[in-house]
Length: 352
Ligand SMILES: [Mn+2]
Image (cartoon, rainbow, N blue to C red; front, side, top):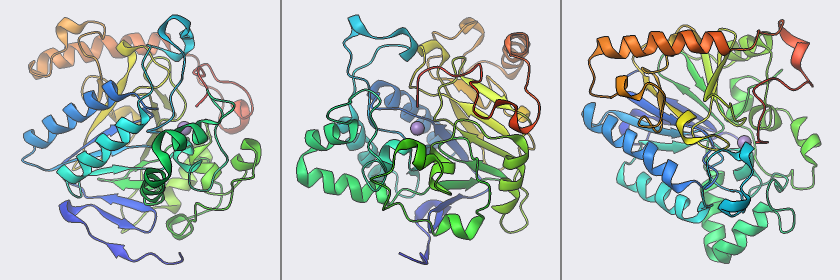
């Protein structure tokens, strides 16, 4: 493909090769790994519609990838570590995603996740289906014609988003050791079908952006600097891929990993509602109850104090209480860099 021309779709967002840019105005609703969960998709889309209405049409919907491939267990045999039961509706979810994009041109985007990549050049995923793989299973469900359309859709997905004032969005933990902006914008997705997952993780950019579950603060700080553009300092990167049991987890000052759907109980699921005009200078600046919102507020704890229509004072009260609790429960932070590489951190649950 080589150099991809800059395109400017409606709505102020633009693609520079494989890098999506959202302007420093309006709001962005950000959703991580759905894995075929259509009810959760509809919840987050309702949040986007509300944001769109409240901001006079200046809102964006951004999925971080892994829209597809769900578990195939019936409710009675659903493993506890997969969170609340749901039925895999990957095909319906893709249809709904495409319909939403048509309804809101230039406003709805998805990054590519490792599960989308398995259809367009990555190794097949075998998380729930060993034989056939999830990749084969979905393609059989779709049939040949729709499969080609879905592959074209996945190939069009960017791999990285630079949004607002210094926020970066990726699918997984961005353990990008060398690549900078130009290498990432020109990355090719094809040609890795025969690799094992272990080999795939070693692939620069692709493995580094959508297979990693952990990245050390130093590597992340350097990566954020290398993808800076137009003098805007990058402060924070947000991503999913690895289910966080409590809904979200900050890693140092730069990283926020959060879980909107897959692997969580409904009451713990969260999405982001980001003010794109605001410069979030640290992951701490993203607050539960303000920027990090429960997908099922009626099930979230202290729900009586949490209503979108509540006054700011009540929100602040809710926030203070939940932050205190989060702090108390948070495991001690590991030492900089290598301490947890290769080890399992406390947030690990279901495999991404
Ligand atoms: Mn993933």
